[in-house]
Length: 132
Image (cartoon, rainbow, N blue to C red; front, top):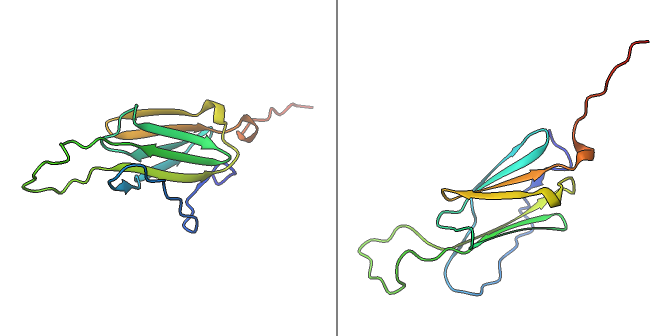
């Protein structure tokens, strides 16, 4: 189903977020599914809230960033600390076949789900056959 609506992971072009606060920035793991009428992108952003999320689509680039508040006071004296808390940031090159005005996003249980509908011109259509 490869069309102009595919999302491509670009290894050669690494985009780094501007650092405006300390702490680590993680690359969220994603799953991308293509259906006949849209792409669905699911990104793991544990600890993110809707207020801390910023999703943008501009000139064929889809950017996901999320600010995550630390669970504990920064001066906490941990006995054991394995879970890293930090912000998330990832950029995707998206074909121009996405209808930017109809993109929808939802956050549930630490998973951001984006619905990226294809432009109507790229949707498959059934052609009626007439008998002669």
